Length: 613
Image 1 (cartoon, rainbow, N blue to C red):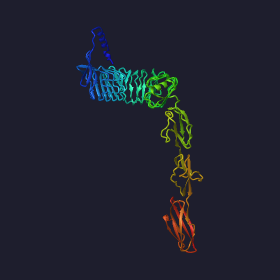
Image 2: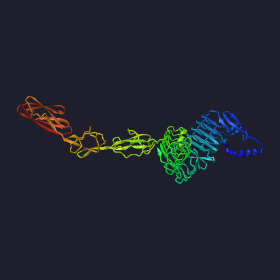
Image 3: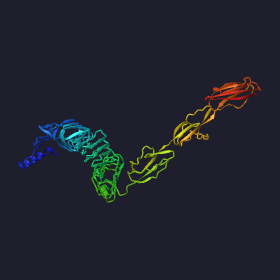
Image 4: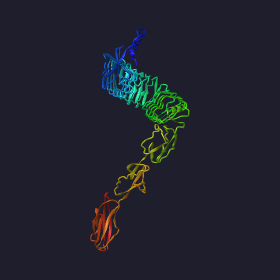
């Protein structure tokens, strides 16, 4: 690339040469230490052509061989992988194309002056910081292409051509956005109102960026390349050139999609009816798209429209589309089904490169058929295969299967099924119910079974005692309830929980299951005591053992006899529940009394008349 500043001088010199004695400048190759260069005796200048050293930090000398170093030639430092930090002097007037290409360790660059040519720092993936001096007067749009670590750009405040605002590089009047650092941490960026144009590759590899706002005056928009987190591009309503719909940028008349954000989710996208053209890289690098249809009204498209769409599986091109642009689907490793109509008569170069799973569905003798044969692509004249989606309702109402589903297409969600005692929780890809099927985003990629997930309803089991609620217990449908602690009632024994107020049907906590809201009622039995056995006779000199019993737990028993001369007593057992009666006087009677104290404090007195025989 010719230095613009010298163009006039060289032109004048050439004119003089045509009128004077023919002569030519001598450009001589030379070396000095690690430096390789040319000496131009016409201008008495040195142009560096190479560097053979392996230093990490390099300061380019302002003089070599006694002459000023004014240019870094094309590719001069290409592949200097040890280079980390480089400083260029203010003698530099021009830095050539690809001058530092693939300097993979290069981190910091300081440039005092000069013009920066095409892709000067191409593929310098470690480049983090760039400082531009006062006399840097031209920067080519591709200068920092593929500098994915670029974080900081500084410009001398006295530079008349460039400036930095909020870490972003602009021209001096802030009408051109030159470079947005790839590693700038902001998630949202509003392009200033003064900006009318975005330079080529100004936005590339910006992993933090999720949203961008385009102001009203911006009319020259480059792409947001490889910004894989970008989900939304919004546009000022008064912008005369662009409009945003659902985060997607269109030309103002909505006939062209300028860019679909690389980070926008959604497995498919319905191209609006107004669209007739697709921009270069319209959908490029989007990892979410699985299926898309190109309507027949699409009559023009740029290159690489879907390039790098890693998840794309199925593309249907409708009749009416006349052409496919260069590399339209390149680098789509999962692309398997593309239907191409006879209306497509022009197919560009490498349209389907790096698509190893691809089959083209076309008609015999069509342009697509010819292209497939010429490029060694698999093709078929048969209709596109279709799949069936069946539903396993797991005991609920089962919807009819959906048949004839094309690969990579959505299905409509069936009516919500029903199941007794359960609430429907959605359709799932697995029987365990861990991977939900999203009817808006999930696409059919083969015969599919969807499984219903159910949540058992939760019902209340209400425990009542004499009309008062003692407890409410939540229980899942089909489960057994847990018996609560037995309630207490003076002079009564708790006899269990019953399903009805008439106490006819007892609730079995081991077997009965809950099928709805349930009320259980406490049954009570009055505390009773008795003496066993029922015999009332004892022979003189013999004994009769009596035992106090009750329908509740006994704490203690107090025994007494009306006459120990007729019938004596002796107590035993825990709480003295036993009493041994000994007959003393034949033909006489005595009364034995047992006063039973139950654990709840209730007392019952039972009497037994004993006859001595």
